[in-house]
Image (cartoon, rainbow, N blue to C red; front, side, top):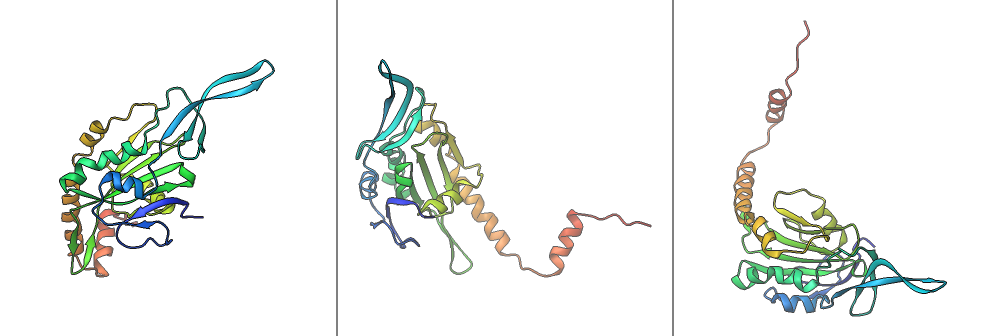
Length: 234
């Protein structure tokens, strides 16, 4: 299934797949954590093999979900640092309390292996009579080996696996990736994302400029000749 939704909560329009719990747009981060079914934590537990002499530690660890003892990742290293779902939601709390963001969607994908939280930036703008442009802050928190934490600004409303994949597949200078081999430092990430509002203003200016231009057949031809000049053979 493309959606791959295990649990989720959403404000605003019903997602295309019709899954999840509809919530008010003014929930606190802790309330959104519970409504989206993400109020569980991840334990890093040692793994064993049954050797002839008895159980022996493998030196690896498994990531296990507290709510149902489900194994999310069967093997990670000693230096793997799980980021708890509450830590991800706490990342938004000061912005939500200040009125800069409002929690919008959040959920669990692929049986808990990927968790996301999306907050809407209260700085949308409208272009040309009804074409409204929204911007969101996305926190994707994978509980699986080989995936990094990703925090970014995105215009995509994430409601499922395919919209998350679409958002993460686009490079942006308003994003930060954090490897699980490092301790998660929210203040450092916030500092690196501090220009997000400036970027939104720049985006608005560029969008208004491009939207004011009108298409004619001569324009693309002229642009092509300007950027890709051809040599005349005599």
